[in-house]
Image 1 (tube, rainbow, N blue to C red):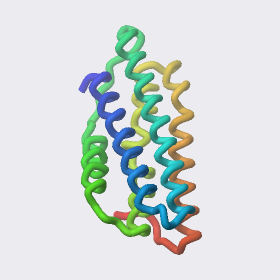
Image 2 (cartoon, rainbow, N blue to C red):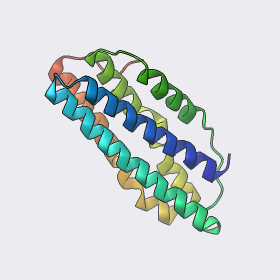
Image 3 (cartoon, rainbow, N blue to C red):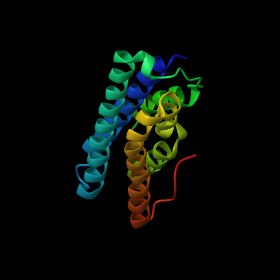
Image 4 (spheres, rainbow, N blue to C red):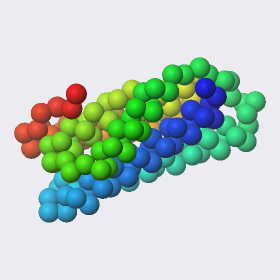
Length: 155
C-alpha cells in the first residue's frame, strides 16, 4: 500500500479514537474524574490527528522526499472498525477503561512513527514525540484503572 494511503488510514484512526474518547467523556459527566480523563485523551488524540495530517501534507507536497514503504494495514483497519463499533455501545466505566488501555497498547496506535522513520529517517525523528504521548496515554489509563480497582486491558 502506498505511503499516502497508509497515512490516510492513520488519520482516520486518530480521528476515530478521538471521537470515541470524546463520547466516553460525555457519557461520564456524573463522574468528573473519569470524564476529565477521557476528555484529555480525546483532545490529545485530536492533536495526534493533526500530526498525521501534517505528515500527509508533507508526503503530498514532497513525494520525492519520502521512500515508499510496505505495510500490512490490517491492524490499523481492525482498530478503525473497533472504534466505530464501540461508538454504538453502552459500555460501563470498566469496559471503557479496558478498551482505552487496549487501544493505547495496540501496535496500530504506534504504527506511523516506524513507517515515517522508514520513509524518511530525518522526518521520522520529528514525529517520535507523538509516540511518547501515546505511551503516556496508556500509563494514564492504567493508573486510573488501578486507582479504581479495574483490571487491565480488554482482550
